Image 1 (spheres, rainbow, N blue to C red):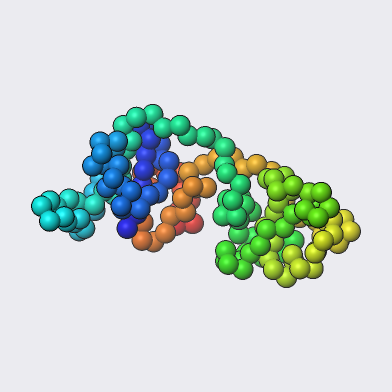
Image 2: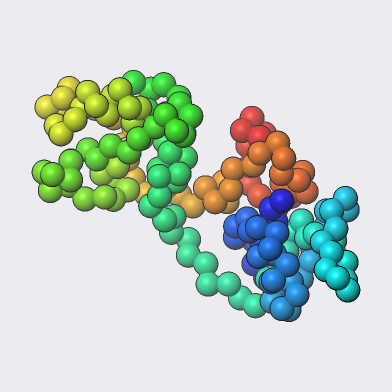
Length: 171
């Protein structure tokens, strides 16, 4: 089970494990906003409802910058190969450096795009112009939204949507 963690202003930060949620709550660093009614956490002497949503009591140092990770690049590019424009699952995708690392390219938002394995292999160690493969979208730093931190699944509580910007078609 997962718990949605909010900052002190009720802005969504991330999703944490139930163990982390219990530690934050029991050490007094967070308050419970909502609980899973059907799930109890038991110790030899106590019983608790598992927190569904927690709010931190102290200010959280959050950065509005999105970390450069595989998941965030795939999310920015909508899980779509930037060369053939087909959507794939995360395990079928790779990261492609427009200017390859071996040719002095850097791993940055402006130099990395989502590519399927076939297209990435076809482009190889070439520049996009040399391979005659231009990405469909110009890569750049994405605008931060809670959707980049959390993709809702069917198992996630409906109550989380009250705190998130979300797309009904994506859920």
